[in-house]
Amino acid sequence: MTVREERTGAGPASGVQRPPAEVRYAAELAALREADRDPRPPGWELSLRAARRFVVGDPEAGIGRKFVGNPSLVDRALVTLATSRGLMLVGEPGTAKSLLSELIAAAVSGDSTLTVQGGAATTEDQIKYGWNYALLVAEGPSTRSLVPAPMLRGMAEGRLVRFEEITRCPLEVQDSLLSLLSERVVAIPELSGPDGMVFARQGFNVIATANTRDRGVNEMSAALKRRFNFETVFPIPDLDTELELVEAEVARLLANSGVGPPPDRDVLEVLVATFRELRAGAGAQDGRGGGDRPTAVMSTAEAVSVAHAVGVRGWYLRGEPGNAADVVACLAGTAAKDSPDDLARLRRYLEQQAGRRRTPQWQALYDARHLLDG
Image (cartoon, rainbow, N blue to C red; front, side, top):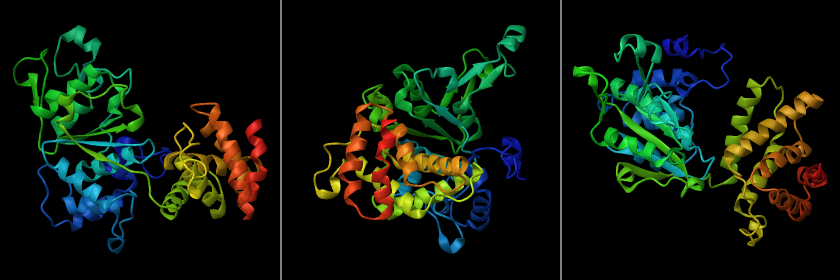
């Protein structure tokens, strides 16, 4: 077990549901560091080339592909992080923005856990620092009573900090990043002397994410936007690639859930095709798409979640792999998240699209449409 695994309690036999990337891929990162002879930006654990190989894969070196997307996006992201600008990843929900930020942080800093999760309740002390109030009352302000938050730790240690869903935070909380990204310093007025200023070490930068469905909720200020380079993460373009990704992720999740056989590939193919067509608008394959698109997010991440539920349902309820009827039953919870009308859209899709296809799995999907009514 590595030092990192001991610190997180995320070793192979720890029972942790989802270890961080630097633990899951510790062997690959160690091999890349050992073989890396390219110049590294100050404070980085890998060169840009090695970090790119870690993210997009290198079959000859035994490095698996972890992010399914345009490699040029990864190149631009790494170059941005080697400069004084932060990186902003935007896109539809479920397009692996968070995964990409985690992988890059693991490659660059060896630690992807310095993370701020944005939301309406996020406060400035969750970003910069807070206080141990028992010590604060007993001793007054001191380094002992200071509780560093991810941004302060990232600056002091020279590591990347991830800020998830930044546009869900109130504007005044977002703007607390302005001085951090421009001056690269955190002022702690309560402390005097050298302890009152924490300067960023080489290697510090910020990767933020925002999904396009949150635009207009808490729009970023122009001043904050200027401190980021924006990159858009697009959905996976083709069925075969998305199916391969879903199949691999579901196999891992089901193994962690104690499930024996995964759903048949034909079942997963029907599931992924259903998600893609609903995402584009029912009937898109006939050139009529776009008008009956569900309001719910029909992303690749949701497809993985539904496929996982299909496998769990089949195994623990019947002792067999999940089938097409399980797909319909599990889809109901996904489609009904945002609007009850989405169930009607899903029912129309099953009747108008699945019913016309003659393969056994599509017919089983069509025959199970009544499960949406209960």
